[in-house]
Image 1 (cartoon, rainbow, N blue to C red):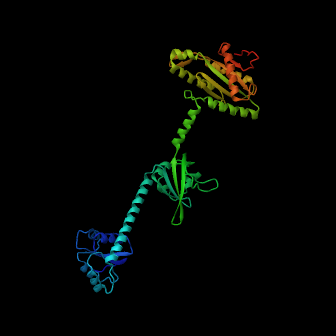
Image 2 (cartoon, rainbow, N blue to C red):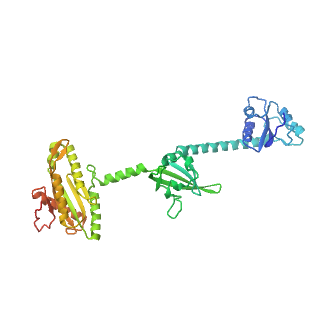
Image 3 (cartoon, helix red, strand yellow):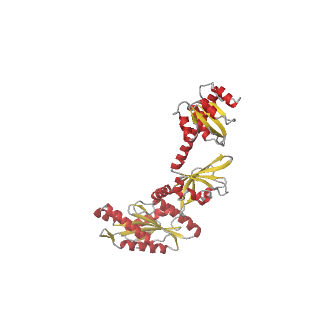
Length: 415
């Protein structure tokens, strides 16, 4: 064998079975070692085939392999055969060099085999971890201690609209300005923290962020797990809306109406202004419902809601509290006359025919009015007084309005 220049320490392997093959595989990945030859009587041994693949000289006879390597005086010989006589041959060729053989070679082979198994398990774990990160539904972002993005999985690319190469090395603040507390500290250890995030196109969206810390080679890294919660927030808002609005007309329901009324009363107390509560009950609605059916009745209620909403100011509230009953809050009115004007507009609007699928329907309305602070400063009592005044309006011929008055005084007809 012609002596060739080696870059690592020359090694001769005798035996290409399991032990020799494991040694060869390990040495092929180590720049400190250069396998100059391998020997085995079986030409189909895995180690022989692997050596040929890497242009390493192969021999069928161990003695010939030792003789062929005589020009490498520093050669280390690993004897993984059962032939102990090869030790004498090595001594003759390389002087007093001790051969790694017998129990020593077996122990070394076992160590190499264990290392190979550990490496394979580690590689398998790494592949599994990479696969998990790659296929995770949540965005996973790795950040160094300078808050620079080090890794960006496909889910993060989809969430933020950036390719990984577009964000590597850039500050995480470009994606999540709220990555830090107000004091400038990272949200480390926080789980499920809601933050506002920014997509590549500039769109902001709600995200759920969890951050954990790890130390690798003495450096601190932070793993951010990001979830786009746009759909969840929209669903929550929809549920909240349904909980506080009438399903048919989309007007505020009784609960939201009372909340708005209490807010208006608090504002009225601070500003010294009056507030009017109107209670409207439709006249003739039952006739439409009975003659044309409930579907037409529902359509009529929707049309009434639209007309009422067009009459009041944006600062006022129109609600449907049940059946054909509607309530209104008129905030910060000057005098009772302002409430009268709105009531008259409502009655005039209701007197116009409603065209329901080509069918003209005519209805009216009876309205009761209670005023803060004249009649009460309690929201529920005000609503009760407005309801009583509406009853008086109905008793007095319908299609009109009445202000609440104390029971001791006969209510004066107004409309």
